[in-house]
Image (cartoon, rainbow, N blue to C red; front, side, top):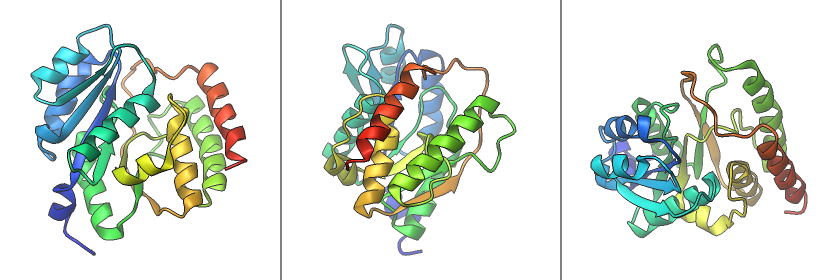
Length: 231
């Protein structure tokens, strides 16, 4: 390893975009705080109408709030900017609904210590038995496209469980405000020559209703894809 896991950990925060996620958020924060101090866990309440903000505050996390829902990309931008302001070099981004196991945070820290990557993306594709068939197909197609545009193989480009160098995110000026932001980030980073790696993570689906709109968010991805041809 080029540096120690503890050294990476000391420079890492967690960013959790959250929209109507009160049911699972407290548990996610509690488990994540076993690996990263809760004072460095940032929750961005993206205009929730439930008790998301209260659940985050009661858990001791740093809480930022959008008065209206702006989308996951906007929440990531707000959270990663706050992580940088707090002096964090890296931000681990994870979902608020429990689909990303906090127990796998050490894998990202270890991979960063080993590789000094700019972005590390979780890879669920080695264990797809619990992943719905339509998501497997969509993920294969979008990961192929994103990998081609980024000029680096990314096996699971739609996985939001990531470690990101905060300064890089801000420099890339990601425009998309919703789910397409995650693909835009990878394409821009890859084309810039940033080092993108991956680490295996579990596939967790427990019947949660996805907030991804199959038509609208697909159109947003396609719009981003067309724009990427001119980057």
